[in-house]
Length: 223
Image 1 (tube, one colour):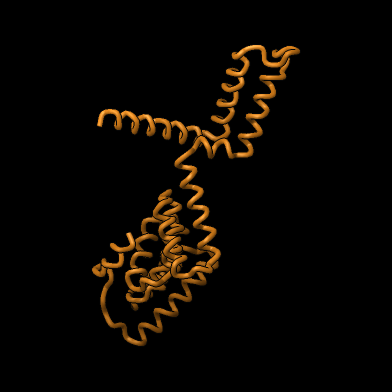
Image 2 (cartoon, helix red, strand yellow):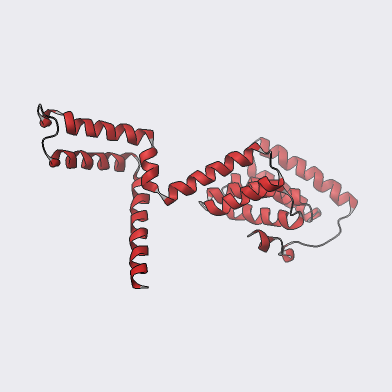
């Protein structure tokens, strides 16, 4: 992505802005920043749009507009603006960082990791990039192994512990504890039902993961 965006000069209008236009663009940028502080993100985008029209070769305006677009959940537009900013200034770490945020929001975790690593190459002491990189790496691990992620959830651990206790030491178990496998199976079914009710997205993610692994295995067998 980075190599491509840095060669897409056609997306950048090449023109020499007049000094008065540059000054006005900077004022519009400041207005946009104030709108961002007030969480008026649509108005911020409008200000950055006008600033870009006056001074289209300023990477800051694209990067700021990317932040506003992300706040509006327009992540694809945010990424495009980050690419424009990087095409103007390949060493603009903030553009890589904001691209990472947008990519993470789109669940493109590996691409987000790459963005954060590039941002850290340019700004190694930035704690925000370090923190966001860890988040993206963890999310990538969770996607790769939803079952492991599920079992790391404290609520799931507590629920499973309760189910097992009921199965092993409940009234139906008698003095000797677990009397047969059916009690354990019943506990597992109860556990699955409660997880389905509390977090159906995790269950669906786990099912999709199993399906994809099965499909991958069958593909390898026939190749």
